[in-house]
Length: 359
Ligand code: M6R
Image (cartoon, rainbow, N blue to C red; front, side, top):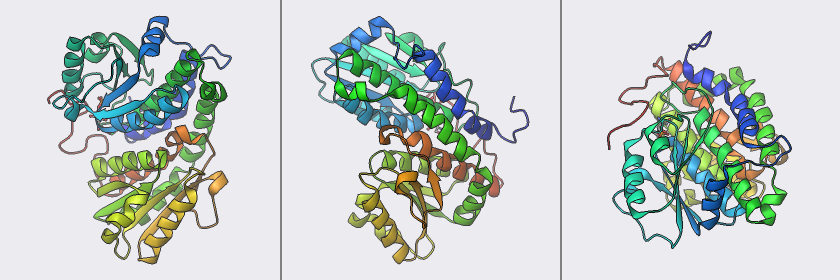
């Protein structure tokens, strides 16, 4: 049950630090070494390209997987929406390996892809929160998130769980391949940092409620911007806001603003700017300034090393490869409190089902 929580979503947001630590427990040997099933590792090593296929929030977690696998394991990775991929299978590499990300393990769009890919004889891995699910059973390999049941329609702990597990698998594969970048990265340590940083943000709930009321209570639209993994977090934060508070919200690559989007900015248009990656912080900050100069209402969320006095919210420093583990927490809480402020049933948004078992 949800205990003393008004909604499962808030409970599940709160559980994320525990999920991070549990992943480390389940997938490392206690000395920071990633432990994966031998057969899975051998199959992954053969791959010349990874195809991550997913839907919704899991797709957004997949996007974060691309730089993780490319950087740590040195293997080109593409991320596809299951509902598109199934009907337009691209020209595949010689030795493709498929990773299906699905909280429920029951998403029909993914199953349709899995069936086609198996018929072609390519290896498949399902990463899921439900070990007894259809996608878990039907793929060659399965890794579980161990996040505990996720009840709220809006996915939260499965998203951060998927990213955490992608980081572990990418490092494990990179080490197995003798990749230097993987040796320099410490997934277990990063997940520990993530757990602590998430807790620090969760402890600021009341402030995030105030910010949500100020930014979103009466707005019809809202934007999230960022670059790289901050962009990926923007997409997921926007989905959280739209699906439970019915605000038309979009995530944009900050650099694309001047190519069109900025014309949407009016007086008081709410825009959340993610400024966590040191490499791109200055550019995104100047985009935020341009929006503010046009009357937009800007909320700046920066990492500790990049923060200035104008930033309303600071997240701890963490490797930018996994920064959405932190930056998404305010995105989740802003969506949650906007839904609460508007009096909606947070856990059961209109028109949506927890698992989408029709194509
Ligand atoms: O169970 P899955 O991860 O396969 O579900 C995919 C999407 O249906 C799901 O993430 C959906 O977008 C959520 N409502 C997002 O919060």
